[in-house]
Length: 167
Image 1: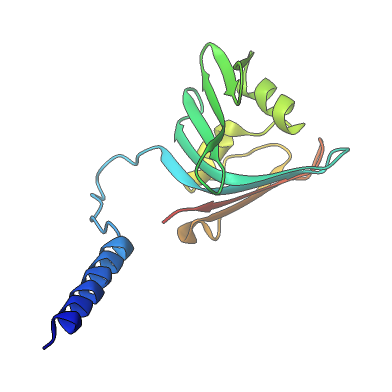
Image 2 (image 1 turned 180 degrees about the horizontal axis):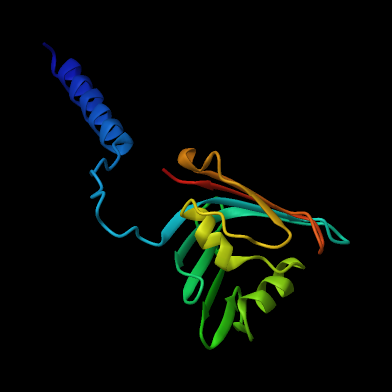
């Protein structure tokens, strides 16, 4: 074999290995008795039929629970667009510039989207439970496939929330 041919073969083999490693995924088996981690990520879209209509779609990461947690939104290139944090002392929105503080998550979601969003119910929905949430209709049938849809029909401004979880 010529040196040129061997060099080309090694180069092709190196690229193949890099490609295979890059496509590999973590396939750890989860302990079925372990407490479910309250952490989700994926794609979220929200449309509020206000005047004017507000629509938002971004990658997200949600951690915590309805009492204490954080929700971050990311651009398609991975930069942080916004980070919402909440706890017993209120809620905070961090985008560019100074953070904005709110008395509650309801106040924060009303300010940012024009609608109060049911954050407490969202955590329940993501765990496959459907608590009574006045004015909201949630469809959890596709949750095993990582999809959730919730609609607010009444009494406030209609809204549509769609979530696709990373698997």
